[in-house]
Structures are given as C-alpha cells and as structure tokens.
Image (cartoon, rainbow, N blue to C red; front, side, top):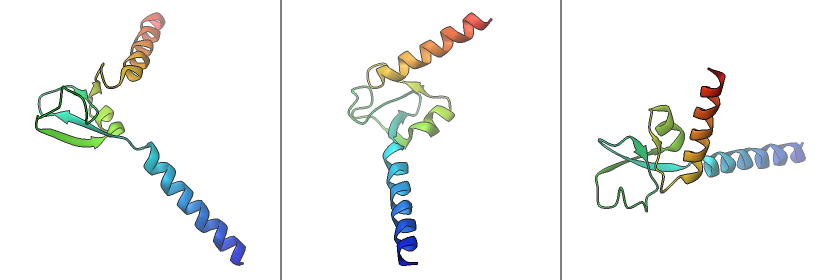
Amino acid sequence: MFRKLMMIGMLAVFLSTTTYAFSEDVFVTQRGSKYHKAECLSVKDRDVTKMEKKEAIKEGYGPCKRCFEEDVVVNQEKKDQEQVKK
C-alpha cells in the first residue's frame, strides 16, 4: 500500500513539474500583434502584459521574428501547406 501511495505521489509531482516546464510566459504590448520574450528590445521599457504563450496564440498574437524565429518558420510552413491545398 505504501509503495502505491509513493508512486502516486511521485507521478503527481512529475506531472505538475512537466506542465510548469512547458508553459512559457510571453509579453505583449497594448497595441502590438506579436508576442515577445522579456529580453526583447521591442518590449524593453514599454508597458507590457505577461501571459502564457498558448494564451497569446489563442488571442491571435503572432510570434516576434527576433524572439521566436522557430515559431515564425513553423507558422510560414503551415501557411504554405494551406495554400498548396487550395
């Protein structure tokens, strides 16, 4: 019984840490349409809102090409694939 409780406890800790590790905070400006990392020059010394990356995407923000170059490439590939389907 003790082993089962230990395993359940370890599983709960693992799941909570992996969820935390994959949630990434990004920063958006009031009038901007892109999400940024905290160190980005586009948001330095500006009034920004902090949110999770997946929430920013859900709200229609796109990736900053300086901060998230990999996301820009992925988005472009998706757009290219959609155009090929049409």
